[in-house]
Every structure is written in C-alpha cells, then in structure tokens.
Length: 317
Image (tube, rainbow, N blue to C red; front, side, top):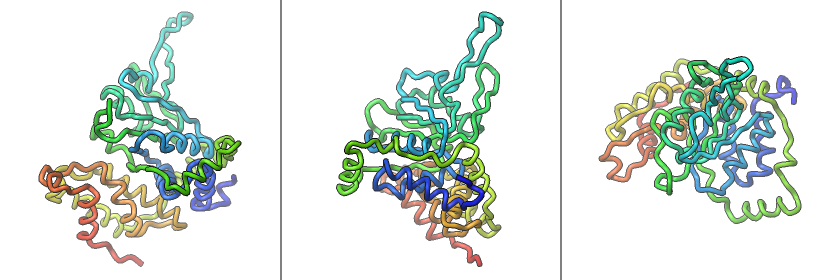
C-alpha cells in the first residue's frame, strides 16, 4: 500500500476491514484499538478468557506487518524473560546481550495481572521510554513499539492489581465482551473449512505505521482546545469524588488519542467533540475514587461524565 497516496482514515478502514474477518461484531472496539495504535499508545484489555483478545492482537500484527511476540504471564515468569539478559561468551570473554520478548513492534502481555510485581515492573521503562536497561546497558526497542496487555477481571483466581504507575501508561482500557448470537454464528460459519487468519492480507509494515503515527502526531490542536483538555484534567484533581486525579501523562494521552480520532474522522485538526469522545475511555482507569464515592456506588465513568457536563467546552470555528 502506498500510504502517501491515501489518508489515515482510508488506511485505517482497510486495516480494520481485514481484522474484522477474524474478529466478528466488534467494529467499535477495533476502531478504538486502531486509534490507540495510531496515537502510539498502549492498550489494556480486561476480559474473560476466550473472547478473542489474542486473536485480535495477532490479526493486527499480521495486517500491519509488525513483529509480534507474546508472553503468557504467570507467577514464575521472570523480568529477564521480558527484558532479556546477558550471558558470558566463552570465546570472547565478554557479556553478550540476549534479547527478551519485549524486543518487537507489538508485544502481547497475556494475563499481565497474574505476574509478580517485579515482573510487571519490567515493562515500565519499555512502555514509557521505548527501551530496556539490562546490566546497566540501554537497549532501544524497535519502532513503533506497542503493548497490548490483557488482564483477568479483578478478583479472578491468581491475580493481583496492576500498580498505578503501570495503569497510567496505558492509553485506554477496554473490553471485547461476548458477541451477540448472530455474530457468534457468523464466526462459526466463517471457520467452516477455512482459516480466516491465514487469509489476511498484509497492508503495511513497521515503517509505514511509524509514518502514520507521525501524521497523527502532527494533527493541529488549537489553544482553546488545549486549554479545554487542561481544564478537564484539572477538574479531576479537584472533584471531591476523586481521591487522586489524572496525571500530566494523562493530559498527553487524551490529546494524542483525540488527534487519532480526528484523523479517523478525516480531519487534520482536533475539535472539543474529539476530546469529549476519548476523555472517559482514556482517563477512567487512571483515577482513584474517594472511599465515600465508592461506598455510594459511584463509578469512574459517572464521575468523569459529571465533569464533562460541568466544564464548558470552547466554541471553535
């Protein structure tokens, strides 16, 4: 695909159209994943096993021509399994770096919340800085680098909460959920004597995705819209229902996601509506509600919805 001849929205439609051949009836979720990838962000999927999380990740990696590696996280997975390690080369007498699973374009961290805190923290540097440090030596990760992590629902056997510092590094948290009956029937029919995954076409490569991400990053955001984002984030820090509001990293994430949504809508500029569209999904997983709000059954989405209603949106031309 000659990406210079096509707009981001057109390319994204073709990518999602391919992935839909193996993930049936989840068009909205696929668009959110696409938007997050275009923004350079990481995705957290919270769901029960068997709804297609891994299949979706593999499908996206194949269609976009990305190197993909997967780690099934369990309590015995070590940080070195993720970041790599150094071994002694007998012939030279020097330590030689053996790359870990994270050295790829799309890293699938399956059931991340089953790993120990030490192993989970091995991903922090990679997700924030695009590098890992092993024995004092920095190793750059391939670009682009995206983490698509899954976690079992809170309270499931053998799980523990992800640390706040890691939750804050995910652009979005979402769920695929069960398909409806019609889509589940289509899924079965599509696999009768066929293997849809093998029929997917590769439309991009890593360099092409990096160019798309650059285009998204250069999407124009006016001063009024920037001030609107900052006001929304500031409101999360002052809301009595929220014990700990959103971080400056969250401000950047909202802006980046809004740029991606704008491009998917065929625009090269961000509107307040784009901000509103991404705000809940980008911020909810980063908040810590007050004990009083939790006792009253208030959810993060409800608290953020009230903030959206309370903070006036700018009128832009």
